[in-house]
Length: 364
Ligand code: GLU
Image (cartoon, rainbow, N blue to C red; front, side, top):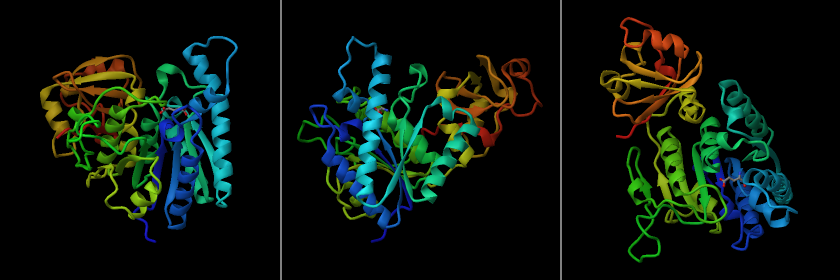
């Protein structure tokens, strides 16, 4: 059977891998593994981003004392991750497939060297027929520097690994255009690049994971903007991955974010996901804002800068803020904050952020 994609990232959330009573949903896990094995037979490389460590540890451990949130996350994930990877190892072995564990933290992806190193790790695994199973290393990640959730991590992995598609498996069929309990509500089937449907999304999260639909939507839009198709679908549905990746179920209910046909460079993709590492903030005037968001490729020149906040060094990531005070993008600076303050507003200076190291959010 023909596959639609050569490489996909599949993200399985805690809610997909867990039963309502908090015990691991072994039959869903078995089904997902079986489907991934089938995708491989059809020529698709798969990277699995799997949550479920914390909930899996919590389910078997009773602590002797009341734990604070950080200690609980560390204790439960330490045990739960071992349990989780053990199950995957066993399940993939039944299909004659080798899998391996990749644990990461947001901080350890914060420089381009670390990023490329992580990319190399997963590339060598895939080249050797090993399925990378990725999760945040919750035992060592510092609360303030954590990924919002594994949706964010999966977006970064899809971008980093040049995947053609990111499938986010949740326990709902997709993004609804209203309250799912009402009969007139339905799943939004397709979202075009730049289309804003945020008004439909209800805040709050359900069940066992950290994330919710708002982060899913934010990440999915960003990743689709980078030229990767993103699908939010129900991981509890049997055969869902085959339906979506092999195209056997074109009518399958899910939300599809159509990829932008203006793919961006690999460096820009890294920068696009680097906002969390930003060391400072640069405010720009209207002229610079229009140049940056216009059709022509433009670098950010000191003349267009109105304020520089925070302390940063050459090569650090900074946030760019529009004249209206709204986030406009992210970039890698060619000067430190002190020098940037000295020359801001001046004409005839070299770019503060070169176009190649600039990622501007498109909301059109
Ligand atoms: N890394 C967490 C875990 O494995 C999941 C984070 C999330 O819910 O997205 O339990």
